[in-house]
Amino acid sequence: MSTSDSESQRSELPEVSSGRQGRIVASRGHRGRSIAAVVLVVLLLAVISVTTGLFDVDDEAARAETRRRVESALELQGVKLKPVRSHQLATETPSGFEATLVRLADEHLENGRVVTALLEQLTGLGPLVVNLAQTSVSGDGIEPIVSRPDVLGLILLGTGIDDESLASLRGRAQLRTLSLERTAVSDQGLSHLSRLTGLRQLYLTGTRITGEGLDRLADLTRLESVKLGDTEVGDAGLVSLARLPRLKFLSLDRTRVTDAGVPVLAEIRSLEFLDLHSTWVTDEGIKRLRDALPNCRVEH
Figure 1: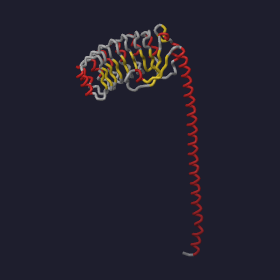
Figure 2: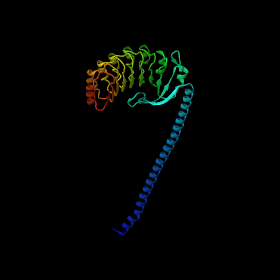
Figure 3: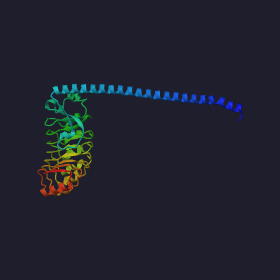
Figure 4: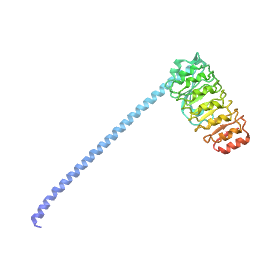
């Protein structure tokens, strides 16, 4: 290779190196701008998150203040309020929902119905369980209550509610808890409950139902807790209960259940608590149940 050729190549090398450095600098500049853009986006998201959080805090504080005022106004009218979980509404009831238990008395009723103005004041308290036990609430008096989507539970123990009254409950799928204990409800009335598909807890202690009426509960597949104490339910009715896949708590105290019903009860594998006090089931039958259902507390 001639000297002139070598010098020519050496003279070209700086130009190549300079071009490469330019591209590297340009690439670094591009990456720098990309990183800056990413950082900017992250900062913007952080600002939005903090701002949203502040709004959430403000909203939560406003809701809490509104609730406090509503509770104060209701308490001045003699309405008793209590935070409650559904498992506190009955011994051994499975886990459930959180709600505000609203205890009403006859002074809050007019002609068998809850005073409209009072019902309106309940808005904003969240999910409600309305307790009207031992009041003079009438049959059509429960309709304005259960028509509210925020009412998830209704306690009518010891009221004048009868079969005809339960027509107001048709299709109220939001109901989770229903107590009809010590009322005149019979098998006929249970037909009105067949569409309460959201029901978890049903208490029928001291009603006029029999085993035949339990067939009407077949579609209530979410039932977890059922009280049937002090009724005419016998062995034949247990077959309907065995079809409830989530049944955990079952009270059959003071019923007509005998040892003949033990094989059916033994098939309810979901049971965690079974009350057979004052029934015709013998000690031998209880032993068979405890052997068959080791995870169930059987009381006798």
